[in-house]
Length: 155
Image (cartoon, rainbow, N blue to C red):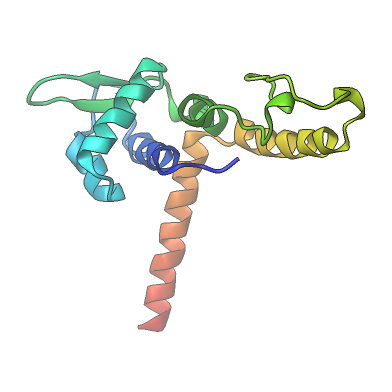
């Protein structure tokens, strides 16, 4: 599995929305997300509309409009987002749990390649099912702190 630019931008946008998430109806302007993550605004609009269709984000129209997570960031996993944007997490279709495709092997049960790719899928899925948007936000904060500490140390 390899993330496309679209997939990377979706996850980066969710970090911004996750960091700004409030239980009230407050939203983040699309321009802010685009600037913070250096994402072309037009492309970001398409991505956020796609995430809206998936029930991951919601929008508010008008002058005070923008986007927000539809659920708390603790309840949105990377796997959910990536599956929606990219499709299967599996490297080959015959091991995908959500997007299974029959393979051309003479026998799936005795296929060594399928066996290894299933382990790869399991490893990827296990990590992505466990990591939430909230955890990515916390990691971003930690990396920013480390970066600030490094700058202070150098000065």
